[in-house]
Image (cartoon, rainbow, N blue to C red):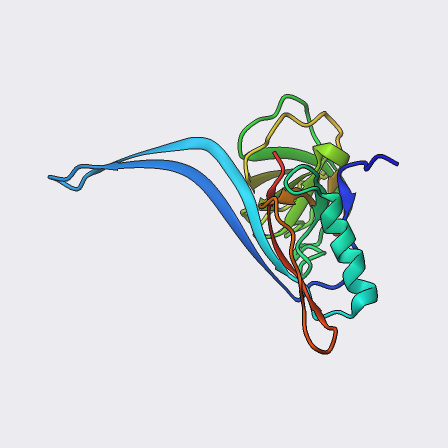
Length: 205
């Protein structure tokens, strides 16, 4: 049976995860005055290193098979921040994108619980899209909803594409779409038949 991407990450706990935000910014500095010229390019992406807990064979082979399904950097999978599956903010309502053709690092939304202070807070994750269109963003400022449930979010990274009007916004267990950072897959086995698995991944763009 052909593999359908993105694949869901196995339901196995993550021991640790390092998440990195990469921005493409060019800096030219004068060797004489040390003055700088800075240019922000469009490139922004998430990167991560994931370490799984020590496992016996039954669990480890599930993960090994999952990683082999990726076929190196070819396949994609869905994964979120395992320690922050719910927002710091209130996060209630049925949040939706308010208006099509939006671009940049702000997102106008509606459908939140009305007149709520801290409907989302700085650092909260949101997910836009699903399947191969899944995108993971961080909210950069505390946000309040107004009397009709509208809220304007400042996000990172900037929108990859313009979401549709009334597209769903996921705040509980939000995920991003990733691919492995290498075409090699490896794991270790010690004398007690305990498996160790770590891997690096990058946002699938």
